[in-house]
Amino acid sequence: MSISFVIVDDDAVSRRMLQNIIEHCKLGEVAGTAEEGMEGTQIILELKPDIVLIDLLMPNQDGIETITQLKDRGYNGKFIMISQIENKELVGQAYQRGIEFFIHKPINRLEVEAVLLKVNERRKYERQIIEIKQSLAKFDPVELTPVRREPTAREVVKPILMDLGIIGEIGSKDIISLMEYLIEHRQAADFPPLKELYESIARTYKQSKSDIEKESKAIEQRIRRTVMAALNHLASIGLTDYSNPKFEYYAPLYFDFQDIRMKMKVMDEEQQPEKGKVNIKKFLQVFYIEVLEKKKS
Image 1 (tube, helix red, strand yellow):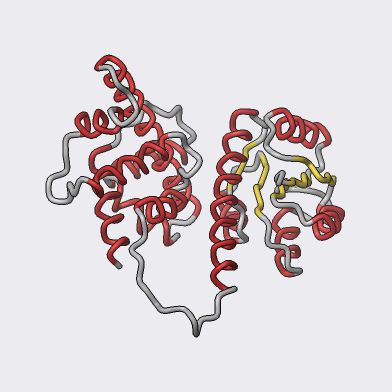
Image 2: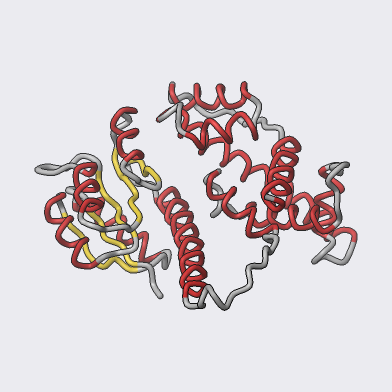
């Protein structure tokens, strides 16, 4: 089933650009558009799209007020905010109202495509969870014998990737493979060197030595980019709301404090980002320990 969008923005050029990106990249279909909040509210309640792209500042009724009304009236789709405003208070209010991501104007095609792919991936995962619950609800609880099944590594890993904001990153698949490999080979006490770990994963689908080495380096690069994306995601949350539960839990657990502070400073002062340095091994070790604990709980 194709994912449906509604675009609410008072700028006709922005609406047209967003629609072109969605359709050209085959991310779904645009079911409707609106140029202000009140009109957008009516269209969204009528069409019930999966995702709403909505401008922050609009005449008559702004984006935050529109989202509030829609939620109060039962709409439970996903929201992505669009604006050139950098006001932290307004951005914080938008996240508190339940937006998934924030796209900055002027609109950049690569940014829009990356954000929509992440939201689509998260939506598919949540839909799978709902379908599983609905299937289980059909059984008579009296007839079921309660049997505790230990969750798979994949089932444990995906919610963590979602919280870190990297479920849609290509390197997230490599992280899943790493966790599955570690659990299968019982490497709990002695975490192997990263090079050895990457080569072990590459060896599962590559044959020649040169192909294994090449793929191992590709895995290393993909994971590094994905870990940097997690750092960026948590830093942006911390700038908006330092007391956010996800920031308080994941930031100090997965990253060194100075790395988080440096990334937040770069974002806050709008500096040119430097080539980031993060402790990849610490990130993966912590991830693995958390997966083990969640599998047993």
